[in-house]
Length: 199
Image 1 (cartoon, rainbow, N blue to C red):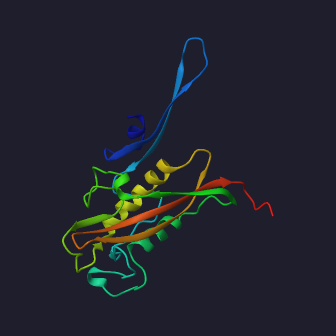
Image 2 (tube, helix red, strand yellow):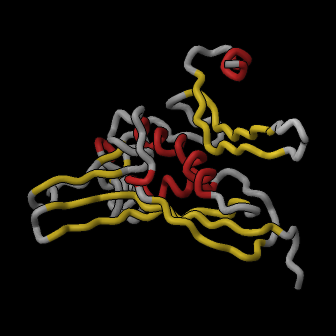
Image 3 (spheres, rainbow, N blue to C red):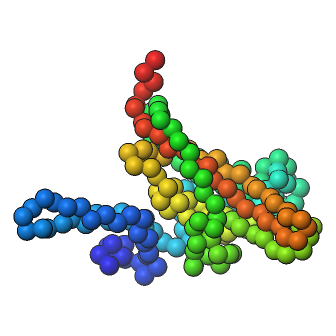
């Protein structure tokens, strides 16, 4: 409530990423509570440069732009552009050791505020043969997923490591002609930042 009041906007919201109860060792049995939050305005992406009004991209397969911009920028797609927007933010400089990757799949991040689906990541599937027309993602939809990246990144962060980078890929599956699935998959890399290359 204090954070929301300080922001001054009725649309301000936050998600609890982590909650820890820490024993203090005092005879009274007193404990401390540590809460990690991610906050901001819904449908905004304050940490990243958002997608603009001409950013209509096919979900994957390097099919380029869609809608009235169809046929432009072949070889790129929504997954490459999402990765590019995430990486555009300057990361913490340094040399990372003990690097490990964490995979993020849409079904691991349910969202009740996504007007485009049920998850914080792109997920599109159905029954029958694979759809003939590839899915076209609007700037608003891409900004929604961009705005959720920090939550996903922070929730998967291993202890004592820092975020390094992410790879975003468009995955496609067809199962026996009876169902199809298009998703975005994140491989998020974390490591120990030791500052400079020891060599």
